[in-house]
Image (tube, rainbow, N blue to C red; front, side, top):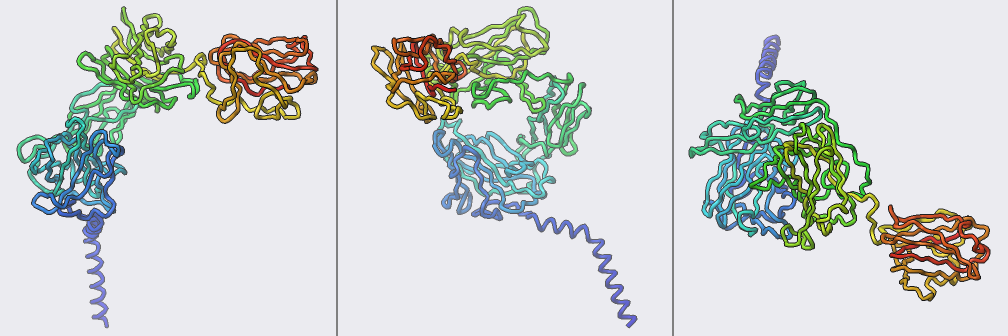
Length: 626
């Protein structure tokens, strides 16, 4: 028994020791078992991709991809991509990701994604790559502007740092348009799509900001995304291949983290006044390029707009919903020198134009109908000292009825500002009335705002929008008149959907007037309209004793009247007019007129109302009340 027990004890101890000594290997095996090391994605069929793995980009044609069973590279099938015509109603380009359905793959044993490709004609494919999963998109790698001919050619996309790809789901991505084919569609095929260990790709050199040493004047609260991230590899054929990479492949460092910190994803946050240099490493090598942040301290934001969104068409402002904008800097070659160095301060986006001579903002898809706007507003900040002769010009351009730039019917107007309107180191709020833009014959198809300057190397701008100060009034009310709240027991109603009106009233007696009277629906509410008013009577169905009432109430609206009066009439006739304020700035005018204002009319025997004046008048809720 002792021998048997001793053997059991030794065996248990051996198992225990073995377990301890192999714990690391078991853990690694468990990881390996979770994430496949198979590099093949597609040969004659998909390998390990699951059933739901194709995810098109927004705006792309969702049916662009299929499996072609008649075309292949030394095989029976291939991936077929039908790039649509640029005007295809289902999508203007082809583009998507192939994401594994389920656990990712361990790609640490590979150094490249490879495949064979050919096209129906010579084309340039915009983007090909891997690492995009629509979740984190952490380890994306992309080659751009890939030339593809009509014969099968092998493409090699180097993996920037395979040690990071422990559980990658983004197996492949592509985007292909028709810019190089005049908008005409084409087809390309891909076969033998897989990750490989070639062993013939030289380790890459990385860069940030495309290898340049960028310098930014900044402020506390400004944030930047480090961009221009590239890695370059020497390929088996001796050529160099540039690969666009995401920040997760790099390690970022700030020389002065108290001034500007940088996250692992390349987000720079300015924290204090001073200077800091942002650099990066790629593996054990320093990446070329850098960002020098010179922080001036606290930034003063532009004044917060207070005009209601309903009275604004916004081009650029965090305070409003902006219309679609083609670009804020089209960089119109060859004469433009202006560069953009836009920044965000505590969540507020600022346009920053440097090396400034002129720059255009275009919003032509669609153009803007500013007919009902009265002004253009923008806030401008000039950080440098004003030199002698400095000017700043703002030009508004309307593309005409065709809505197209250069169609032969474009009009525009330029407004010029100099000192003392222009000042340095302070926000300048500019409000330009359309009435002063004499060269702008229409503003129904506004498509551009152009800035031009002399001796003005740099400026910031914010809150660019058109607005209506109330002086521009729609010819037809956008909404119904306000719903009355006076209890019906306290009302004698002449015309209103809210009450029972005096029976038998004639709203359009023939008094020889030129006015055209009708009843129209405004937001579902019956409304009285006097078009081309000169005068218009309203015959009550029976004489009314309103002596116990205090007011005549009415709601009226006019965009073009310059004269409007309302009369009460008693037998005799005895009549008295009260003058109303027109046009109706700010929408419907609701007025309660003291009945004493109509003296000497006999309020115990009112038989008629009359209006005279000019323009088009909308009336509602005409009643006497306590």
